Amino acid sequence: MATTVTAAGGAPLDDRVLAGNVADRTTPVETLRRRRGLLAQVPPRAPTQPAPVVVSDRAMLTTEALAASAEAALHPLGPLDPSLGDGAVRALRAAVPAAELAAAPLAYRPPRAADDPAWEDDHGVQRVLEVPHPTPDRPPLTLRALVVWSPGKARLDAHLRATQVGRLDAALADLAGKIGRRPYTTTAAVPKRVRTLLARHPARRFLEVVVRGGPEEDTPLRLLWVRQEEALATAAALAGRYVLGTTAPTLDATEILRLAKQRDVPEKRFALLKGPWPCVRSSSISRSACWAWSGPRWPPSCSSPCSNCRRVTPGSPPRGGPC
Image 1 (tube, one colour):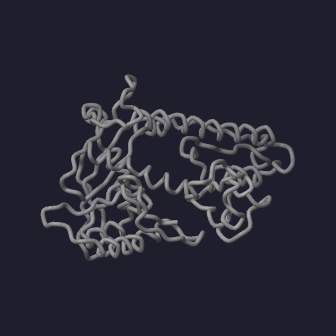
Image 2 (tube, rainbow, N blue to C red):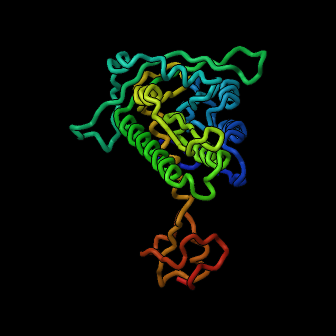
Image 3 (cartoon, helix red, strand yellow):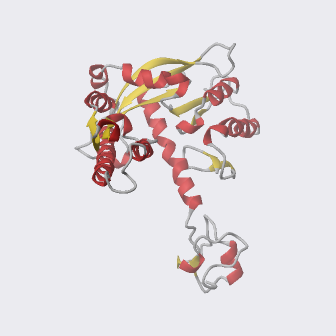
């Protein structure tokens, strides 16, 4: 589902159901078109008022959507995919010196950490980022980029990397213990299994894997792997970094981060829509009313959760009987 809500309070403005086989990158322009139609129905803003800022996740910030936003006089804001601009975002994330980031704390903390003495500030440095326009003969799109380093994200990235490398280590060790037993008795079967293990594995760039031996060398088959320390060190140096982008000209670094954090507002609305939807047990409503109220909102008279009616679509009988 694609939905648009207000940043203040998450009031729904627009939504549409998408087919399950639709890629995220194909939907932003149509969502933007609907958003423009919605804004056309409200009174025009005064010339002195800034254009609306649209906070999105990175799936919505494609080059096509950025170009359409520029034509619609809307200011997108959100995290940028590292592959955006033929890797321009990835290069920018790595180009900012660690010392410069360390010297630029951001005066933002979430409400949950307002009184937390152990809170560690995020750090951010602004840069200008140019990405190719989707139309080849057009000038590049210019964004204000904020390269952010988050201590909390750095710890999560390090833990995830260690977990992924450990799992690949374990899978390779398991395969090495099976070599010499069917089906891993030939020089074709073992490399094939190695390719399967490494295909799309998130830790594959951190290990170099080779298969040695076999009948051709008159030695037993062996599986060897070694950690790529340079790649691990590079990943550790970039842990916790991400890039936010916007075209809003007046936002400072702290405000860009604060607005980007408001992505949790639509995410919570998505969680509500995905369910399970609470339909409640009450003697004051009938079975048909229970069906009708199987949705994100329910009658004020309802008092307690009804497990019989979880995940019920309107108009269909609840599982397990009436409320």
